[in-house]
Length: 549
Image (cartoon, rainbow, N blue to C red; front, side, top):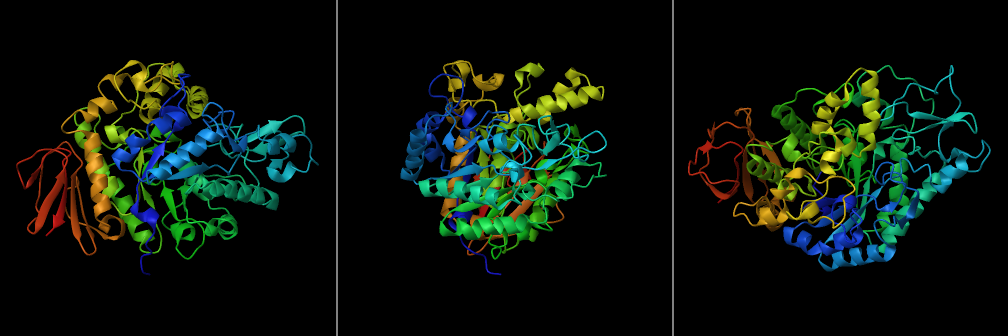
């Protein structure tokens, strides 16, 4: 199949977590006016598409991923007028905006659910999944992704409702055509305002096996893939959204892909499917997760990462598309997880940037990665805010794990690692807010912040800026064929991108010196992440970009 060219394949996404980006009114919570004040910063960096995490009205049990009103802005973020100004400001600067669409579940404070729980014969009852208990307990043995049972008992009607996430996030019943129409109405409302698309939260999970069978799988990642995701009608529902609404607009849709494997990816993103434009597949993000999930760590290697990228590039081919990323609001900081945030923070942050911005797919940068922000190591559990952390802590306590040992696991894998506020400068609260932030600032903000980084001759921000400008200059990085060099040291990741031009990317993702034992003749060195006069020896965490001349 001939590769289809689209604007969203040529551009770069920048993810904003609004609560932690910039506070404008000193209440300690980032807001829309704060984002507006930083639009020139984003334009200067060179990104194209802003992905805004949820800003809708919400009780904030899961920081906005529990929506009580899809048609209004949460007051702590501002007003609809602020949103309109933000959207206009982005468009005036040649940038686009995509919103988070969270429709696998709503908040339990959404009017649909408040009605649904009133009685078994309420007209809204089947907007959600209600089932009687079994043998004195829940309807089945499913566990919530955030810990505990996926079923919550409601004494008022003596039944349980399903929630794959927190108990304040009841799953919507897409079998009900009124639910699907409600989702279409939400889509059309925001698209008519002029936004440029949606990132669709846990979208493979919207279709359920209505028999709700018990599962005997003891690996939770397999449970997500084989039980919670890829349900019997998921493609019918996605195609219906596309046919009824999305195809009428020149927008992009990207689905969060838990449970989507290479075997089924084209069912979601094949160009002839009429479903999604691309997915954030999560296979590499689940690396190091043991049978119990992220807080049950197991070793993984860079070879594991490379195998995944190889497999996905082959799987999507010219028929589909993915986004390339190494961190987001749900996973640790990429320089802490995939780089070396101690001895080689600057070098490894730049190497990872080069990888994300040169692999095949639409790159996505998470706020703060452009200055090499790191994981945070709070000593006390009380300093963390994430509902997942507290739910899993209870489970681990029951297994005999001490709070002290659990906090060490949170240091590496907790979601608050990426949710501490953006570090703008070395002033009080890192220039994020004049008030006490909703979560503590990472204590290293005095050394790692935008002002300090941009002042350096070898700044990470400057490297991102160069890479982003270079990527815009050459469409090869969007459409060129990806080929990897085989048979090299396991510490090297080397590949070409080829169409009318050819580029060679050489990455040494290790603390070792590595020899270049392949031909460089005919290539011109365009960009590197550190000074090195040895042409055929790579320093630790060295990254080079060559162009064939």
